[in-house]
Image (cartoon, one colour):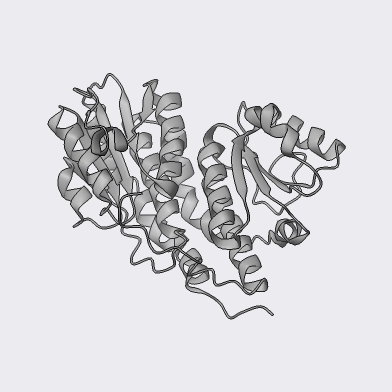
Length: 340
């Protein structure tokens, strides 16, 4: 029996409102991006755990495709466990955190700043230790998030990163995509992906999520939410990777969700969807000629995967309640504020 609505559901509905200020062309994100454009960096380091790390993957693709800078993912345990701070002098170090209170992220940010990097924190709590450790702070201002499964802070982290890059790279098309994003996020709340939820309920032994490029961060984020909220083993893979070793694990008991944005990597996702359907693997796809799920139509390819999180979150939350699970309090989990 379906349970009443949850905190997770309520926080999903807040996404268009809390994301809107970050999309403003004269907002704080744009100001920081403009400041970064005045400097030269040899490379960028992105630091985040879990959902924040998935936002970092999205940011990596934006920086590498728009600015041509190499981006590395930080491993905080190199500092906190092995005691060996990497050499980051002159680099930009971006830390992404919902709470801003994980001791390992604080330590990594402090070490990067002491090592000569310019440090930027994308954080929901502007008064948190991570924010205090950084040179620059971009508050997400998504408001309190009480459900264990983060949703609105994840989306605002993705939007914040995109807004910084739009100004930094002087990318007018990306800025226009962001300007349209609040309305499109509102429309995305109406998309019904229950057909995918039904696939997950049909004796699924595991689930896979796939996409490429700008979609890879959201792909990994959706896989995390499946495990966290539905207690279903789930993996997020690039569509290129899924054609290799992981392909052997796919069967009629492993439903696949494919995210496809309209960019040069779209054909690879389309080809994979056709191939898997030909082998009778259950696949639901968003976007493109093979799309089976409701979609708004193509917008900016770096923004569309952010939008796809909204109906995916809603479908996961609804399926959790249908199964009698509490989407706000998965067993054995609490809101992450300590070292992972």
